[in-house]
Length: 306
Ligand code: GLN
Image 1: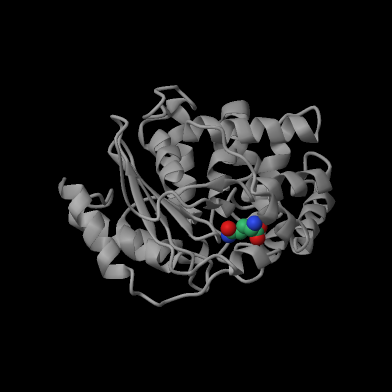
Image 2: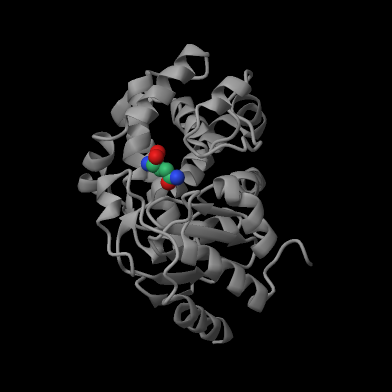
């Protein structure tokens, strides 16, 4: 009840905020109505609280990187993952190739595009279809329903992803690509185009907050030991070059996507999902960040002040 009151007041307070702009480098994203605004929170007992536009399907974009990371961690284990990809910040924009030049041993982390595409390539798969099926079925387990690609988003991104294809080939050139580079980039583009609602995102995050068990279906989706590496990556790199500011204001691991979604995890307590398309210059939802800071303060969520 108290949580719902604070969610409602956050929605009222920030709905008139005019800061930021939709992502424009992917044509589809530019066309999504900018005033859509939803807030959802998922609790370990299966309850989901929702305020605003929580049923609208939007593109998961970079938040997908969290769930592909989870799948790869399950498969290869956290030590091998750390040695192959890493967990440190690049201090560069999310799609920078400079980071690839600077970090000779491995990409820096699974959330910059270079590390994310390399992470996709790490999955042990027999074919492109097999790689994709493993990814989408993992996402569906996190969400507790069958998720699908928004084909319009996928087409829009595929037509404009020359930069990411370039990253894939640079990875290949430096020995950091573990399958065909075009296949890895295509599967990555597909995973970014998965359609989710704000409610889905809360449940997906709620599975991480609930030690790897989906709070609604009660299925164990990942092992508990992989929760910490996922949250470490989110705390360090979840909002790109604005991650420090986000952590400063919320005290929580988070992850953003250029579709306008933001996910924050309060381990053992709940997961917060916000959807609002206008982004700051780093590619993070402006309202999403404000809601995160507001609710964390009101509800005492910060992990840095226990
Ligand atoms: N598909 C987008 C890209 O690769 C995702 C980026 C993001 O959400 N930050 O450019």
